Length: 66
Image 1 (cartoon, rainbow, N blue to C red):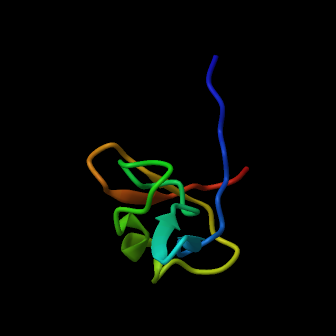
Image 2: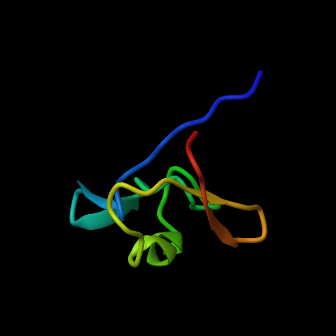
């Protein structure tokens, strides 16, 4: 079964574990989920209201809705 999940966050969330910070992915692109690997940098120039698909090679395409 496949599932399409839409994410709208453009950055991680910080979680404090004692005195140490852990950064949790919210953009959905990290290869180290649940941890952030910086992949959200690709999302910073996305336009609001536009849906994008990210291919496995990291390329982004705009999804045209019918």
